[in-house]
Length: 129
Ligand SMILES: [Cu+2]
Image (tube, rainbow, N blue to C red; front, side, top):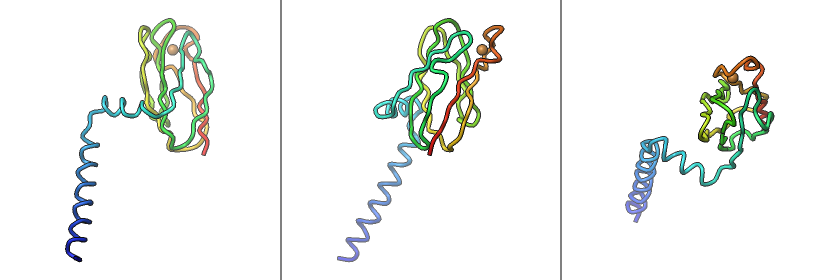
């Protein structure tokens, strides 16, 4: 009786281990698809020389998708502390999954030179607990 219980427990642990390995092995593309089932999607549009909305609030630990698009040309979308560094193409949307791991105020900048106002092209991200 005891042995059976232990076997069950061991079996469960092994199974859990296999599942985790399986998840880790899943390519990023599939992870994105899975993530988009649940997380909130925030649409952000870029154009010379602003992001709209220019300010968003996220919750620490809550996964969300930033759906980025541009209405004129290629822009960048970069924030080191939020671990985001992507380009926003001119002709299609880019989905960026984000799970903030710290509360605070962060700035996303356009890091793809787009003209004279490029240096001021920023977006504010507030992460609350
Ligand atoms: Cu720019």
